[in-house]
Length: 386
Image 1: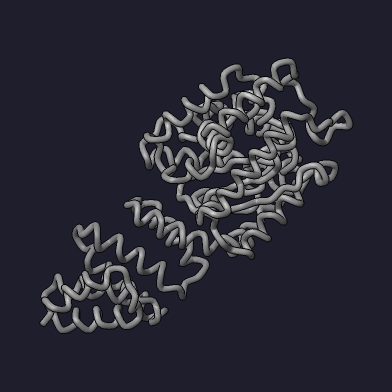
Image 2 (image 1 turned 135 degrees about the vertical axis):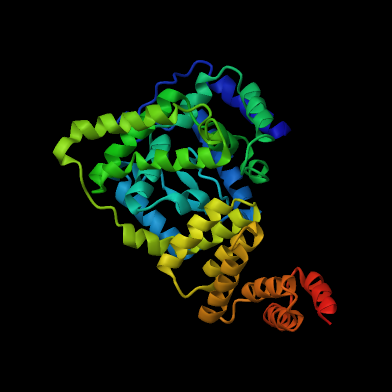
């Protein structure tokens, strides 16, 4: 903590006489300044913590896909100055943020919400603009009391959903970018400069406003007044209207690719993994949406049917148990090696008093998952079956 405070004091002293008006890295007037270098160094330290945290979503094919989109969007003159790299974090809430050195982190929850590559490009272009337009250093210079700013950010964390241990891993710079975001003006600049990149790369800008619909849907599901990571951003309605005005100016020129099918195939693994995270957190509507999207892509994966069946089983309302049994049986039929569906069937049979069938299902579960964390729990059921 002493190192962090020292770094902040140093940044404050260096920026005391520095201007907050900085040209983007694409400008001929760009000069990499001393306080900016220190901010980059601190960012790299935080990135190493993230890399060791176990919170990175590991999928090389997905990483290559995301970074390929970033290359399409990135202004050529910025390539040597900011080596963009896209990473995915295992977190089921819609969020994304950028470090000043071009390291961008996208939550699995946001990828699971999106519908196509054009929406993804809009998000990435927005975050890339934060880096190319040097928004982090501009905000650091513009704040007189940075340690107080971080303290106020930290004080909010305990009440925010979907954050958990992430904030302790991100450190101060990552937490500020992820939780509080940037000022209204800088967010608007990132939106407008980012959508220009989207159009130049050939994507359909009409998909851009749909990002805000995804955020609005999440707000309504979680009964939030404003998504926590947009707490200091322009309101969603205002930002969506900015995109609408941009599209009106384009008129008939608006159009381009969405690459929906490619996107769906590339994020399929994220869909089911994020659905499992949502399920463990009891967010059944999100789980169901992701599982259904996943099954539309991979109809022979038992995990999707199991999740839908487990939602029905746990709801337990009129007709739900019969529905759950059919879904568990479908899971077993399409993927006999997947163990959890057998457990689901065992619990249903046990509830119905069909002890022999329950025992058979439970034994199949343990045979296919010999190191299951709930083994003792299932063994208790087996003892009751006898």
